[in-house]
Image 1 (cartoon, rainbow, N blue to C red):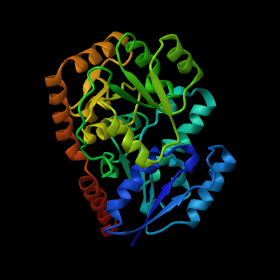
Image 2 (cartoon, rainbow, N blue to C red; image 1 turned 180 degrees about the horizontal axis):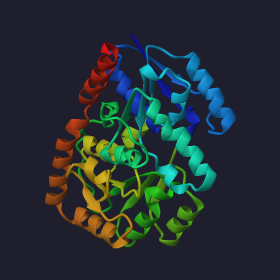
Image 3 (cartoon, rainbow, N blue to C red; image 1 turned 60 degrees about the horizontal axis):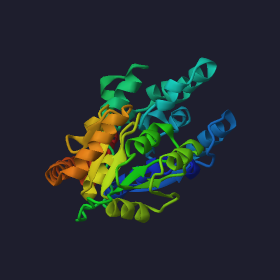
Image 4 (cartoon, helix red, strand yellow; image 1 turned 120 degrees about the vertical axis):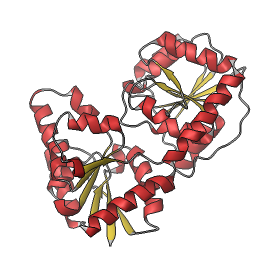
Amino acid sequence: MKINYIFRHPEVGFSIQRVFQTVNLGVKKVFDTEETFLPKPKSNIPAILENGMFARKKQLDINHITGDAHYLVYFLNKSNTVVTVHDIMYYSYLSGIKKKLWKILYIDSLKRAKKVIFISEFAQQQVLNEINLAENQYSIIPNPVSPDFTFKQKKFNTVKPVILHIGGKMERKNLARTIQALENISCHLRIIGKLSKKNSLLLKEYRTDFSNVFNLTNEEIVLEYENCDIVNFPSLFEGFGMPIIEGQAVGRIVVTSNIPPMNQVAGGGAVLVEPTDITSIKKAYKNIIASDIFREKMILKGLENVEKYKLSTITNQYTGLYNELIEK
């Protein structure tokens, strides 16, 4: 039996690709697997049709749509198609005919899948608020942390800690409030991701000591985590929040939002803040820098929490799912 992991075009983003290529590291020890990348990055009707027909020709024993391109279910054999749903955030921003069309392509399409996998309770509830699925049609399997992220001891820089922020351009990553919260706090802000014009201006206005990198390899991203003192992830909206468990796995203290799913994923092993409250974010950073005991306590809780996201744990859940589909 062979499993086909179907990925969106690489130009759309690498986050889902990173997650499922990690999953595949474990699954391919049990099953034959193949990775298929869609030919078109856009989501207009001609691109959807071309991607759909391409995926149709590439069908194998089990077809696993790894995320984003849910519409592919309309083109595949529904008896052996699995879809992983990361979030439906974009849907909430739409209106009118565009919203109706998006629902048909990305939400209603899930009804045709043999199995729908949600990466968090939050992502699951988002979808179930819009459509009804049979209880045996869906389940939750969280994202695994890559084995590349392992504990690395580092002495915390109390004089000028390096704060790693993932995501420069997207407003929901909350860089603007982070910049404001760090005013008059001695630190170096390390930003991964291209900067928006707004955030570039804010960095100048607040005279933030920062550096900015993007288009990094997986190895370079791991090094960024290892070299930082704090991982900053006070996002306004996520389907999961990989930087939380990646930071915990490396042994860094993590700052994230006290809203689902981030506070659920963190499992008590991160400093929770109100993401729209600059004062809350500033207070968190002051507490972290001031207290060795507090930092060590949170880091240990993070290391405990990350155990449930280990690759072997997640792989077992996916291989169990595939075996279940074979038996049926």
